Length: 205
Image (tube, rainbow, N blue to C red; front, side, top):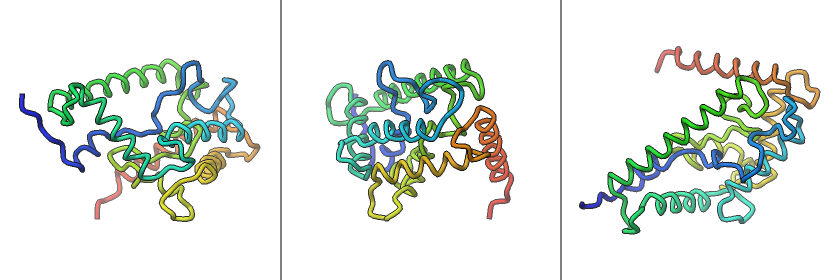
């Protein structure tokens, strides 16, 4: 069957899916609550951010930049190109999409089993102990994640990444005691839900 070459922009959209969703190492706890006591401390949030940074720093050069995004896309393209032809067919693209959907359904089922606010559940929407990644929907490194690049040099260092995590942590730590309880998590999720609903209801100009 004749192969279909994927244009660069279409490929970026197709291969989208946050690098922040990289699976934890075998035996590693998912989420920031390392000791699974239902409370996230600032130290746990910082440690989770460091682990997340290590996974996203694909080429291990100590920073997150366009090179990491390109390397990640190249790896995903290689996995999709199952026959090694250097091109991606419609069948290969469909198979990759179905595999992603199956993994997403599995993750959602695992979170549903934990229940809202339980240890290991996501903290406040898209966050897992680190800053809001903003890497979905094909935005990649050009999306919300680059807001962490405080010196605007086109790269995110570990210090900048952790600073984003702590800034987000502090927003959720309602009573400023250095701990985020399950109640504070639930309140953060509800606030985010309300903001999302307000944006949806706002008239489009």
